[in-house]
Length: 87
Image (cartoon, rainbow, N blue to C red; front, side):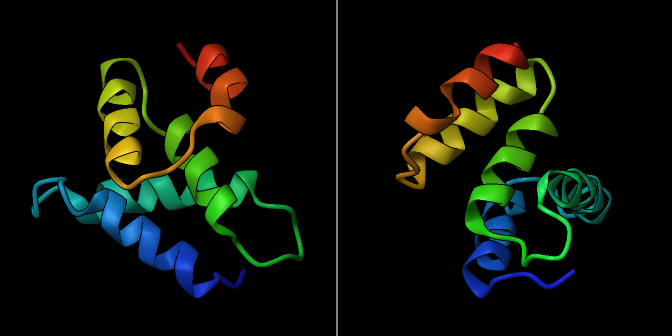
């Protein structure tokens, strides 16, 4: 599956705070969730990355995920239902 450039860059930014020794494994898990979210046959978009990142961040990690997305100036309004579902 192809990734839009801005989607790949956002994913790299989102995993950058993860300790270097754990980053490859964490990134792989997040990518898997993003690909599950993305529509088959279409390129992975920034929206897919945000949804997949939220879904791949369980429990307390979701609070950190939300804080990081807000720090990146991501409007979370369209994802409020998803955030409620995953609490």
